[in-house]
Image 1 (cartoon, rainbow, N blue to C red):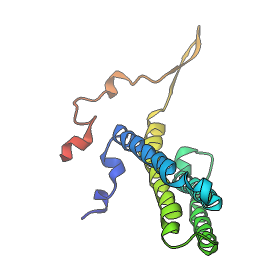
Image 2 (image 1 turned 135 degrees about the horizontal axis):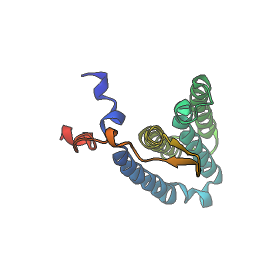
Image 3 (image 1 turned 30 degrees about the vertical axis):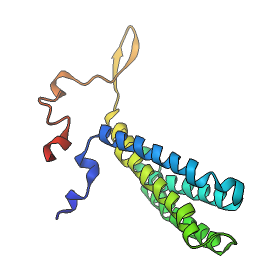
Length: 174
């Protein structure tokens, strides 16, 4: 087994990850509505702790790939933030576990699973959709003396793909 076999982000297209991202977002929202939201009436601290952990989980992959998204921020800053956020989540889990009414199965169901759902959903969003779209959206500027600067996204004729196998690389593995 090669390490390149584990990198699914180069193997599948952006549209495939957009489809998976849509399903993951719907699943996460359904989990919030049917599992987390009923806690608001019963145990208010657990509801806020689970939402806080979900927000931290969203920002872990975003900060990990921050240099690829924004060129002005150094890679060290993004890696530091993505390392600090799991520590904040662990600190939140410790305090949630020691508080009254939360612990055991409730801790896993209401705090750990939402964190994992949002980390995976955010990873698919950032690495599978946002970064490839950011890399593909390189704009070309055409300067015309009469009209000024014209922004164009159209590829040049010589750079077009020759066959459909380059468009959908995941079909080769079927």
